[in-house]
Image (tube, rainbow, N blue to C red; front, side):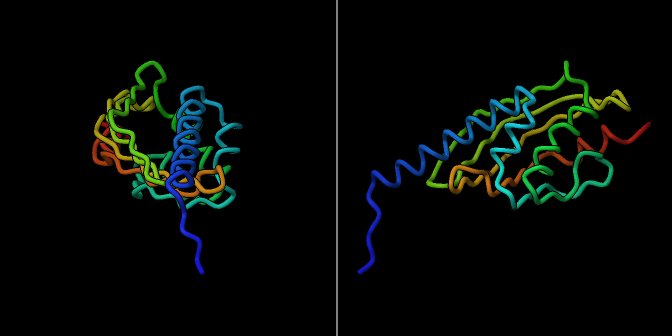
Length: 147
């Protein structure tokens, strides 16, 4: 006979997801790549729409590759202009969704970019196994393209 999960177990899973996502956001804000590597699973379902004009956007699948995206983003953008805020943070079991707005400036061109974003993360066994980011790729491509 299968054992049904209790509300307490579901709450515990959601609490773990929320905690890991909060740790992810803190590490991201601090630029702590070592902590990001530890938070990502060894294999990650990474989704970010291909955008050949944007140097930090490429396929990734390992925790180290995923964490490196944040370093690459910092190398190509002006830190003082970087802004991101999430106005929605939803957690349902192992899944979390953040929605908000981001903006910044591409270092090589001096052009700004901005737009809304949605980020879906999945946390399993205390590590991020899915990172799907939906963002304004047109704004990013325009900002990365020299005049």
